[in-house]
Image (cartoon, helix red, strand yellow):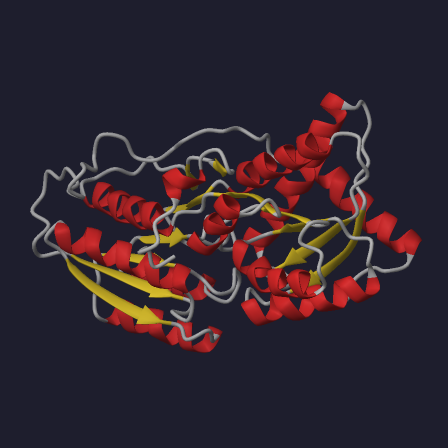
Length: 353
């Protein structure tokens, strides 16, 4: 989830960048379709997946970019539990937040001869080579959660519908504010990440589309963008800087709950919880849902369930083992917006994420 460390602050440059993003979102973005391409009928309530072949001798390997975050831990747990419930062996590897280490870890899984490789790439370009090695070894690769360059060899990408989720959050925000002026700060993950970019695109597209529908014009006033490195500490520091440079901010939009959870501390210390509304394009982290339930300053977030993504990934791998080949290149979980009205349904205090 990566972008750029330097923000366009000067007025004309800011307008140029905001306009470019908006035009891309409105003219070039894929349509916001609230479609659900998740497997249906194959995965029952017990986590068992229909299979015409004996799965007891099969092995699924999974490589995470890191395990130093609750989301990645929950995703690993979901994949492992679904794999083992279906009688297969599970092998995992941790990229340790280092591209070269993730490449080596994937190579090790390939050498061990897994029957399917689930890969969550830290970088969309650096892991292309290992997907080609996997194909040469006859191992199907499934990209999960993040994205990879189209030149890679893979069956499908399994992730939440980041564009549609972001758009749902943006639409909610535009409806909430109506004609009231929004002074927006954007908290992003880090530079260049395709998932973060798509979430941001969805947020801006959702705001713009709803304003056109309800007001007849677009007033998309993004005053600044800061990078958090997808961390609590990064969000805290970014928000402290934003409140100094832009004390008139009344909206914070973010590509992920984790980007803004630290920012809440800075907002509270500045005494501005009554003045700033937070909207997240993802992930449905339990701490964010609790804020939505208990406060008015965290407006909404969108569901990016590591549990569902893990189940879907193993389901697709088993379908491949059973001979299925007609996979879409991207397979989405269903878009879902979490607001005060439905937050209690999705809050689990015992969840890893």
